Image (cartoon, rainbow, N blue to C red):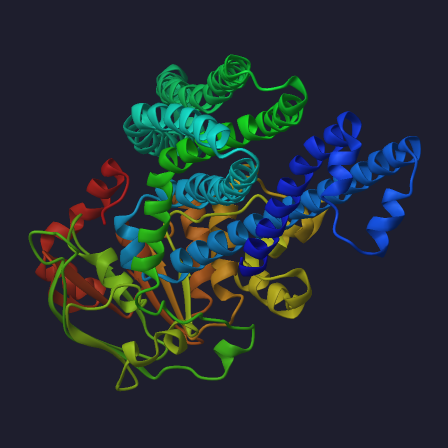
Length: 586
């Protein structure tokens, strides 16, 4: 930026010299002796004075061409440098925001809409760069303006004051009229873009339901309404950016004609008027676009101020505290250590801004190799408890301990021991291999670990039936394969790193009974080799577990084997039926 400012100053000087050279060349054509008399007494000046008029004119024209060629080449380099700077800053700010979003705690993402985050990284960062570009243009054209008016002041102060006063007053009045409207519209378009991203995510993310229910028109209407708002505000900003040039052209011509009228009225000779008119004409050709660009840049800065405020606020807030450390792992990490015990001691958790606690004093202990399950009615706190055990939600009070050590002391080390299978498994629009080795580059994928995970999830028979095998592309969310195969890929993903603890959060709730039995069979094959923790809405899913925990209102009400709990709590006999009716009890 520092070098760019220096280059802009040099460019402005070259612009001033280029403009000043035109009236000098006109003076050479009109009154050569007077111009030659201004040259200093040295060898070069004596050579120039010795030239005949034709040679002198051709030499002056050649020097003028070389000057403008050098000036414009320098200006092209300046444009390239400023463009590179803006693109570098755009990439840097976008990367900083994406990094901050990725590494912020899970609780941050519970409170923020993903569409807003995407809109900020894409739309607001782009608008901020438009503001930066406008600010650089403002600085560059402002320097040119100052130096050109300084040149006019040296040649004819009265003309300079008149032209500067007229054009500056006109520009100032125009900007003062539109500045508040630009700021207001800048904030409104920010909201429109955020809602556009949100509508697109909602419609395309639930395209199956939208088609079945016939809701395409609803989403199209919402999208069209937001786009109309964007179109209206963008059109206003573009018109405001174009109007100053038209307005200032009229003012510049008026200023020149008034100067001519004053010269004539004062009785000045025509020969003295021609160089001044040439200077005014060239200066106007350069000043009108310059003033127009300055007005346009001011309008753009004002219009995009809201985007800059948002991006700066996000960076200030998100980078104020160090983000969570990355949690890298490879296929062998999970095999190095198997936790012997997982315990919760008086764990409480309250969601931000929630009225009551989701968990209230939960204490339990799970030993290595056990298969345990959490059951209970919807809203009992089962999924919240799993998120706390995963290290995603820090307890409000209490501790989660692994082998007697609080996991918060090194969440990454604990999470490297975990394989997690959620209810809704997100599968990327890519190959089965890349979905299993999720988030890894091709050259870092361990094929042995992939094969082990495929076999453990009982996915090998299915893969063998595919012409492309593991390189089969399955579509976004796995739309090209069955629900059972999607769940198996999710299980294989969880087992890829050979974890010591496997946690399943209603991972079979969307499957039919037969498919669920097959998937559960794949899971129970891991029994004894690793600790398994399940949340399930069907009792048949958890009846073979070593121990069940009954949760209600965020508390562990009872625990024991399936038969023990069923004998003490007859209402559990209705969980399966009720769960099937509601699509799953959480």
